Length: 471
Image 1 (cartoon, rainbow, N blue to C red):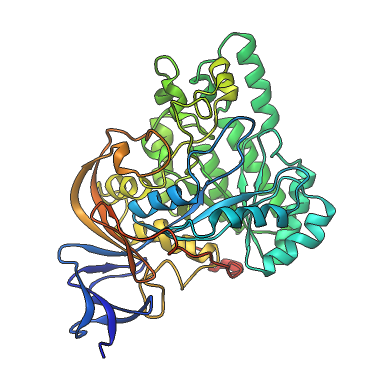
Image 2: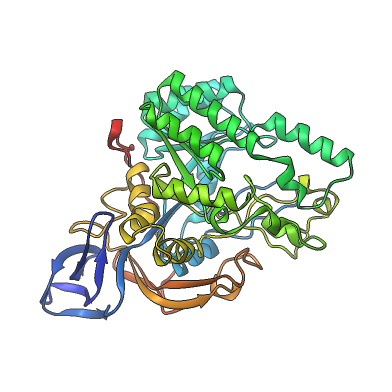
């Protein structure tokens, strides 16, 4: 009997800590050996001149999420996880949104039904808390955290989603008591409404004014307030999609004071700017997301946040809508004002090539940091490590083979999502994932989908580590 189902031979294995030449032996979906001369296997994958990396974990994606009247998100689980696999990802964490008046259990039951049998890669769910009633906080959340839903997200902006400071404190308190990780979208709702109303009265309604309506102070203030509230409750928090130096500096100061505050940034803040929103007709709507892309100085600041490890994770915030579609970016109301343009951009497939090319190839970060930001830290923070996020004996065989020298011009047809555009169209990158394997099964091989949408599985999660062990 052969001792392995698959051997990945001749590649360079990279983890968050080490880089070494060795072969990877896989049996029953797990990594069972690392070494040389591992013998024979039913399948041999030649990884000569390839990097053997842990599959990407994108802990911030939106699939099949309710998006308001007449607006339809472009990706359900099948297309979203397919696109993730093409981008070298093996696990994604989308958000289960509780709508007002709905219990979390009702929301989860529906969300699981959408995911069942529709996933090319593995998935776990964060819970978005929009209606923190006594029942939700006192009974549902503690029970759900015990059931393996160990991360919550709260919003400080958006109609129907924004929580008051009191509601934030109450939710943070439950996160502290249960050991859940709390993610915060930090923008000041009242400030955005005030600026939006003023812009609209002056007739400034084109997509580019979306950026004007949410300037840096709106994000900085909310970041500072979120940190202050978390300090009152003594709970770890993750400030998501940080776009600029001022918000990053708030996180850094908190970390220097010993608070357990983490940060996340995204590709749009490294390679897009607010100028992308300023295009003819409605083309700028393709780049409407919140926080919006800023300026070149803010891009540099976000790189520093990665280099100096102020940020722990790099996520896509994949939030896809079709552009040329009345249920998407060109919704009739969206044409009347930026206020109504569906908020979010697709990016799950382009996250890793952008970070690899702009980060590793250009010498801004090293390969081990790339693995930490793209996979390992996500697994540690969100309760999936060491099953996910590393290449080690006993870990799931979630592996992406990369050709570090392949030059690719990003085109939408390479993305395989449900949207009809990519905001990164025409961007040239060096380094590309050429094979994606989930639990020992190849899902994407050299640009071809070979895995079924029944292969991906739902992952209950452990609670994140307490204290200072969070990366």
